[in-house]
Length: 289
Image 1 (tube, rainbow, N blue to C red):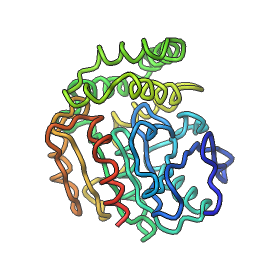
Image 2 (image 1 turned 90 degrees about the horizontal axis):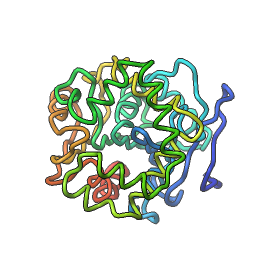
Image 3 (image 1 turned 120 degrees about the vertical axis):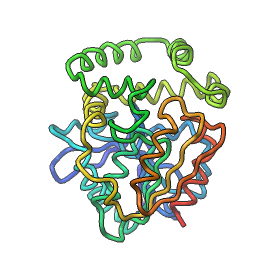
């Protein structure tokens, strides 16, 4: 782990595909793989006040996002093999995982399929639950599930939205987003113009070269994930804000019931975004210990 390019980097897999990644922190700390939300990119953590001297995070983009190559017929259960290959290429012997929002199912897939001691623990932050869980058909997350169940319509819609976000003024795009998206008080307060423009830049990076990744993930979220969450043996830390208006707190009932080896943290008055901003350093420390 002597050399890690900082920005705009990708790593070549044995099948020839490339996966985009970005490094946050210093390599003398415990390694953590970070899985972005929907939509998201390797730059998502730029909007979080990380204690960079106390973390070593490899933020990796799923196929079809940012600078990661699209991979035909990619499934959630294919992700753990890619993560292990990247860890091996970077000579990382042991690591933990943090999956945020739409990165949650992919983090849980790693917890299910990676049986070795190489994977220490997993944290799910405001994570999605399976599509048939109570609350997953409501609000913003319900709209995402609807995208997944209507692949042709959602493909056309995402192409339109991509063109709009890539060609619009950053500041204008942010204010339009903030006006249209239901946000709890802490999320509204969090998003000043500086953080808001970083958010839109993250969205732009996600679809910079197309909508393959966001379209495919919407479909994957809305269908069977390919594994039984109740069979996961790894330690899982689950974090959620009780004011989350994107992924409702009711989805936690599923994880309370089905995860065997878990610690659950419900943060009072935190929203979908504020919980990451206010508690990410605590979560990093937790999965590092």
